[in-house]
Image (cartoon, rainbow, N blue to C red; front, side, top):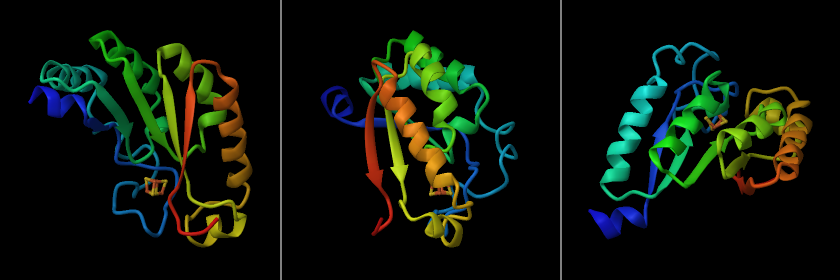
Length: 163
Ligand code: SF4
């Protein structure tokens, strides 16, 4: 699988839970925060799977959910994957917890954050994403924090049709 695997991302879902309830979510982020965390793969198992993929030739890895940052041990996950030898590692997040997590994630060895920003309209957050309007500002603050943390590059994605 060598050359083909090297050009592709290996995605690992580290939890099926999320702190948002977007109407368009295809059942990845449903359920209350914390419910699925205990049942998710532990750090050692994630590292074991990643090591197998790495040995098969994968060089690009993404951590997804649900919302990966709701895992209290997400920095340990990042450190464990870096210890496997993975250089190209990113996290896809809704950004809601990024303000306090940007720096610890950088310190754990994360090189890139991919924020799925669904909208800049506070009221769409309430009507379509199941979150309070204040979450928009929280996410923007998180994006600022990630930008200000050196060595972490940011990718913004607009998931919904309009902002
Ligand atoms: S933020 Fe992402 S994972 Fe969470 S509910 Fe919305 S679409 Fe689903």
